[in-house]
Image (cartoon, helix red, strand yellow):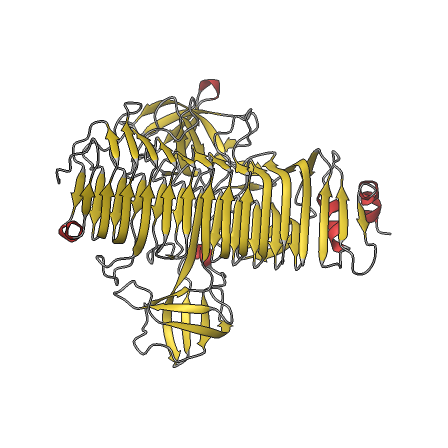
Length: 607
C-alpha cells in the first residue's frame, strides 16, 4: 500500500462501494469530515466499473479542495476553455443518481464541482453548493470626485480575500491565482440588494490605487460612469479570466432531473447544458445565503442551454444576484468559411467562448441561411464531421448543398432545438435579463415573478458577436408579474425583441414570429413595455400595467410601445394606469398591419 493510500485510509472507512453482482448498480456512501473530501471521492470513483451509480451523501458539510481533483482540458461553451479541476466527473453512465439529503458542499479555489457527460439518465436532489472564498471583490463606495477622476471605497474583508500591492488590488488570492484587473464591475443598492438604479456595466482597471485611513482605498481612473456614494460595488475580474467553470455542467446527456439544488456561488454559470436531451430543474435556486455579506451569488447565468433538445422545464425556482441572465436558451450559428465540394462545407465557430463546441454530429439536420435573408432555408443531413481544430470543422452532407451557398452565409442546427417551459419562478436582483430565448419550438413562460436590471424577457438571435441562434416561432408569455424592470442605465423594455445580425443581412427582414404577451401584471417606474423589431405576429393583450413613482424615470421620452419593421401586431384589451408622453412609436411598415382596440387608459397618439 502506498503512503498516500495509508493517509487516506481513515477517510475511506467512511465510504462504502457496494456491488451485489456484476449487473447491480454501484452505491457510494459519503459522510462529512473536517478534512478535504476530494481524495475520498476520487478513490471511490476510480473503483467504479458499473454502468449505474448512486452517490448517497449523509447530511452535513463537506469541504473540497482541488489538489487531488481530476484534471481535464475542457471546451466549455460560454466559459473559458482550459484545464479544469473536476471534483465529481461522472461520465458514460446509463444512470447516475446523487441523493443529497440536504448536504452542503463547500469548494475552494478553481474547481468545477459536477460534470455529467455522456450519461443516459441523471438525477440529483437536495444538494447545496458554495465556496469558502468567493472570486469577488466588494465594498461600499464612500466618496467620488469625477472632476479629479477618482473614487473611494471601503472593501469588505470578512469572508473575502484580497490584498493591495504595487500591482494594485489583487483578488481572490487563492492558491496563487489573481485576476489581472478588477475587470467587470457593477454597483448594488445595499438596502434592496438590487442592482443600483440606473447602474451601468463597467470594466475597471485603475491607473493606481492608494490606501487611505480606516481601510479606505482610492482608485484613480477616468470612468464614463462613476459609482454613486453609498452603493456596494462588486468586481469579478476581467473577461477571458472570470468564467472558469459552471457549478454543474451537463454535456451530451439525456433525461436530466435536478431537484432541490441550491447554488450560492460558482466560478461561472450555475447550471450549464450542452447537446442534452430532456431537462427538468425543479424547486432549485441560485442566490446568496440569507446571512451572507455577499452582494453577488454566481459569476454568470443561473441556467444556460446551448443546442439542447427535447423538453426543458424550469419550475418553482429562485434565481437572484447573479451577474448575468436568469436563463438563456439558444442554438449556435456557424459561418461558412469555404465550400469545398458539392457535399462538403468548412464552417467556423465565431466567438472565442464557443471554441471546441460541437455544432453538429452525424445524422443532425442543418438549416442553410443565405445573406441577406435571415430566414431558414434548405435543410440537409450531416453524414460526417471532420474536425480541423477547435474553431474549424468540415461538414459532409447526405445531399448536394445549395448552389447559392457562399462564404459568410450561416448554418443552424435544426435537430438540436428544445421546447421550453418556465413556470412558478422568481428571478430578480441580478445583472442583465431574466430570460433570453432563441428556439423555434414551443415556448411557454407563465406564472413567474420577474424583476430585471435590463429587459425582463429578451429575444435576440444574432450573427454579430455571440452567434447564438435563432428566431422564435411559437411563444406564449402569460399570467406573469413584472415589477421594477429595465432599470439599468442603458435603455431596455419589459419585453424586448431585437435581432442583432451582421452587416450582410437585411435589417428590415422579419426574424422572430408568433409571440403572445397576454394577461400579465406589470408595475413599472418608466415607460417602455414592449420594444419590438422585425417581428411577424405579435399579440399584446389583456395586460394590466401600472406606472408608479417608486423610482426616477430614466427615459421619460420613450413610448410605451415601439415597433420597427413589424407585421401583424395586435395591441388589444390592455389596461394602463399612469402617465406617459407617447403611447406608440411605429414605422410605416409596422402600421400597415397594426391592430389596436379596446385598450383602457391609453390614447394612441403616434410619436
